[in-house]
Length: 574
Image 1 (cartoon, helix red, strand yellow):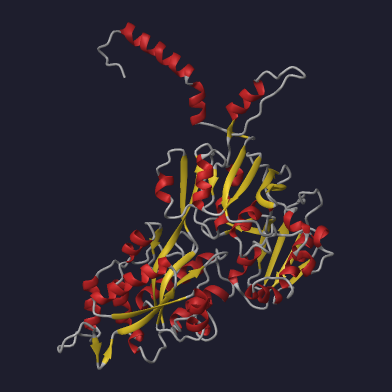
Image 2 (cartoon, rainbow, N blue to C red; image 1 turned 30 degrees about the horizontal axis):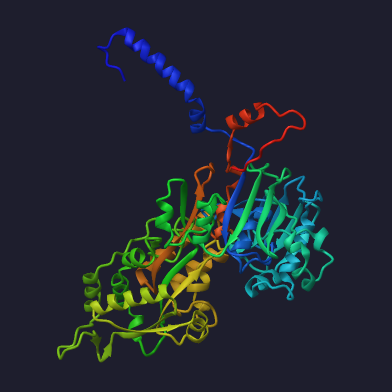
């Protein structure tokens, strides 16, 4: 600014110049404080292809899930911390014994064809989830078969469980289907019904049309729905174009064909980050890379020793794995629960890579390098050597080799065995015939963490407790958090914090990393925010707040003189 010694006249002239500049720059300043207005078309390059636009049939196709997220609604949805929020249901209550869930729908709900949406539609959808002829995963069907559904009137209903099960809310975010359109179909007919490509839902956007080229579906057009209970979205139209790869979608962006890219892989990320016209949103995926140890393998008794397991954890350079093989697109994991969720222990101790500490733990446990030579540590004739089986992919091969080298540095010998993922599960994990295994635990659709299946004693035989961790204290924490009568979320969070602290002390398996999901959108699209996700479609959780047109722009468009009758008009897309 001008110094005080300047003359008053010069100050006045400067103020006049500033006023002129502000007047000239008025549209720019309006943009900085833009208020959203309705209008515009958002076009996204969607990596994948179409299957069925039906939320009960999209479990194997993330591209379908992305579109269905905009077309359909559930009883509840989940925020980025995994806490249930109202969706079609306005309120709910849970009995003190945890057996009864009472729901009240919002008044005035309708389907996108104008028909009323009621509790009968919810009950109809649940019956499909129970139907043995419908292609639903067995664990979901088994749960719903045990649940009784009572419809009291158009707005009120109740679910009755045979026993308390606090993660039940996870199962109530399913997309509700319209009984008036599908109620007369059997499962086989519904599987191939035209509805699956011309759906009617209750979400913020309604189906418009399929885009076709050479008899192939190349995209889907969705239109903002005025009847959405939370209000009409600002963006008039969302268009998805399908691409085989993220690179192809980015090429389409460079050519001006799309405004967003549904997924940015590690190879493409540096290029996208250098593009000043794109905003990249990053969040952790609901997945955990982990090294499982078979704690019940009689030939490898050292896995039962806590000090050995702690040594193994300190002996892995997990940050190197993240930086070198995952392109920095992962978070180092120190426990089994997703960071950012209500159950995550923020005070979880961080375990750094420290080979000296690892060796110290091994020495305390009595393992030494034999005096007669060799680099394999042993105790009482038992050598620290084992077989590590891993999925036969390029990424897992790199990670497994890095772990092998890390362990060799502290005197542990590892033999690597690569197998297809399906074989790893069927021939090694399920029969518990492995010694150590590099795997990815998938928590998709699991906002409520419920670590019970992977770590409870009861799951050690026939379940997913592949490590066969037989720890009563850990199991009690998980039992209480899952099924204790009259328990609050804060009490459950405390139990899960205790579980995580106990896990860190015992280290029954070796958590490695939580992968990162990257999503890119043009800077033209404003109001975008992406928090922690439980599936890729969660990036649309705030779609109603996104906008392409600001209020000032809308007013200018409204004030633009209209052509005389018969005069040609020009159209353009943002």
